[in-house]
Image 1 (tube, rainbow, N blue to C red):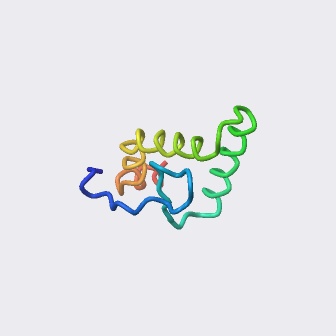
Image 2: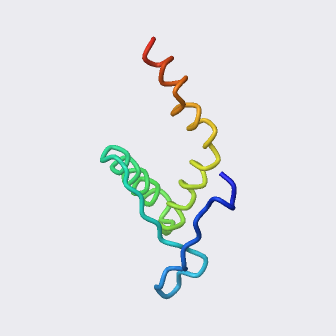
Length: 83
């Protein structure tokens, strides 16, 4: 995804959120629960602020977007069904 296709939102209106933004997406219950569990697990192991943990998880997912595209592509789905 190019930077041109990313919709930019105004900065969050809370104090101390410089350089951060708030987004909203619908996700499956399974994905939401897994994400929240990962954030909590990492938090309790590192005591890093949760916004830093969430940012790192987003960046990790973004760095693997080609793999996700391959997984979601019709060809990949067809191959998975044939196995």
